[in-house]
Image (cartoon, rainbow, N blue to C red; front, side, top):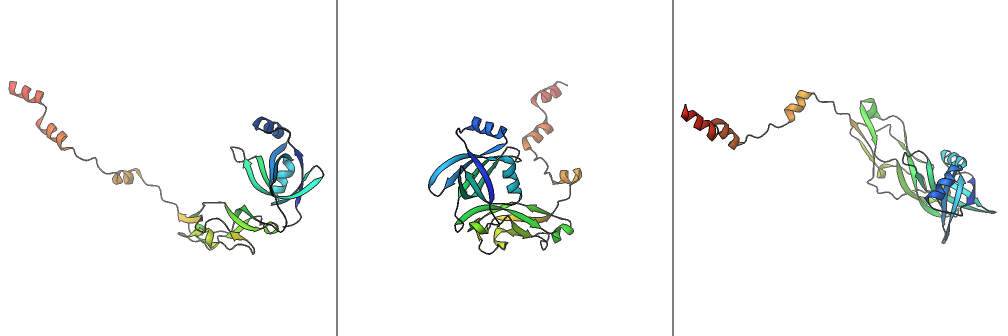
Length: 221
């Protein structure tokens, strides 16, 4: 996995939504450190360094709090309502030999055979939960889709995981499907499929016989 990314943290003296907002205005990301039966610590991290580390695929990080450095992993990232900017991070203390459960993204590779035949590949989930040693956490689970044909489905149980990695998500988790796009129906076709309104006997009888007022008017004439 390479050398852990070093992030220098600052302890947050104040917590809460308003305090967190002030931290973000300074270009930093609020975070919480927990794990190893120690008290959680509220910290903040430089937003630029954090995002750069994540974009490089780093999952294992070394966080410096004061003069002490601890090895940690990103346990959870919280994004804004647009799903664009990170607004909070949960970090968990780990040891290099420790086995952990983490969620990693799925990366699709190749062009599906079905797509060349007019099919559409639809991804139903973009991540899986796995278990492995801290040093073996993959940046992503790479899935080749080149052999996927129209009508095929791919589940978590179909994925070949790297050595030392165990699937925690349900094996039946649907990852993707490949199907044809249904042709748009014409107005005439839609009207033909709509069942005719049922005939109401009472209304027909009344229409045929006429109302009592109409009958009286006929007798007068």
